[in-house]
Length: 90
Image (cartoon, rainbow, N blue to C red):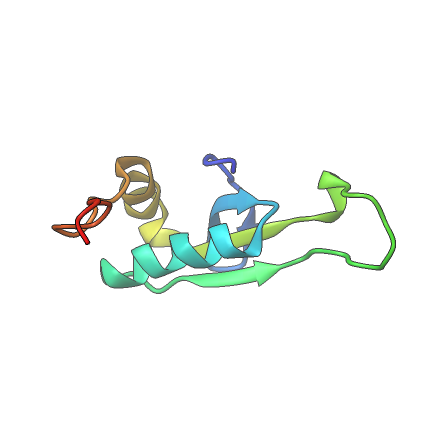
């Protein structure tokens, strides 16, 4: 996952670029929970059988350009796990 994506798409800026759709979806969810509008753009090319080629696997998370700095800061902070998450209790 790369964190400093700076591509611009009109009034939207890419704040994250990754090769995995699920990573982008999780990042977008985190941003939405913080009150930011976030869109996931999957620009991947898939054809079977084809080896994994990073240049053909681009998934970006976009936010409004005026909120891009805030979004990058939120993604850089990470997220806290909910209480009890990861515990071995059964």
